[in-house]
Length: 269
Image (cartoon, rainbow, N blue to C red; front, side, top):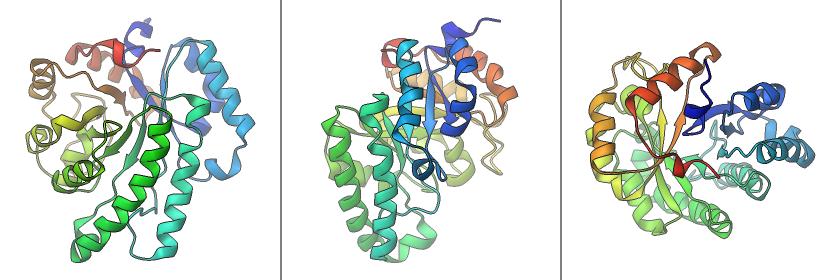
């Protein structure tokens, strides 16, 4: 089945190492990657490695997004050395913006109530300082920095951060799976509050017990009402599908095509 017409309406998560190994096959499917920069890739790969992949994507007329690293990182850490190491690593991802010319760069806000809630104001001050620095890089290249919900239990911290950043280049990435698995609530608790900043969706499903990254409709997330709201409000965010198994890719693309009717103008070059 030729899925290229669907693939050009969205992005699909792809760690850089996987992308590099499978680039020709992915190009044949017209897949537009959200390039994951986790692990050691930002230390071990050269600019030539990144330029080679970017060149192939551009030659094929395909867009991409970037996903900055987040494991073990804390932009708002109270420890100055952890704070610096976190910002330095994330900045390496932002340095790739002129090479890949992505449609966005996605970052995890990183607020965890069980840790940061005890010193929330200190965390927020340090986090705001760090995200402001990174936002200036994205802004200089005219691409949005998307702050994604992960372990946050409510939209409070994201809303506060986006209000404080106060920039059209500071936007929100709504992750459906994280709302269900980590926040343990509903999209209605998030999207109406953060709609003015909505710039991107991460679409995947689960049963509420863990972040399973199932295809749309394979878990308990209410995609029917969610997609209806998106359509009713005439929202046109970028969309990234996040299946974690290769065998779920076709299912994810077909489910996205059935469920969402977001214009392709947001994704293609």
